[in-house]
Image 1 (cartoon, helix red, strand yellow):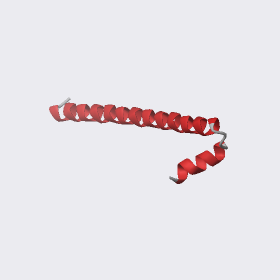
Image 2 (cartoon, helix red, strand yellow):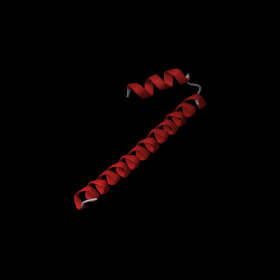
Image 3 (cartoon, rainbow, N blue to C red):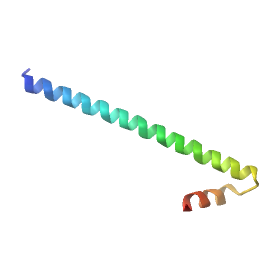
Image 4 (cartoon, rainbow, N blue to C red):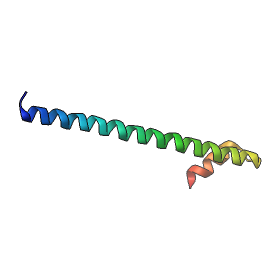
Length: 61
């Protein structure tokens, strides 16, 4: 394998690793956003609000 081929393999490995890291971060953000929304809805329910209405208010902001 030539030096160019080895370098390109390293570049590909880095690119794949970076994509995995970005996906993991996005997945973590999605989970945190979901937990946050569920927390807001639970809080709204504790005050007697309808969950559907609470979602409409949250997403209209």
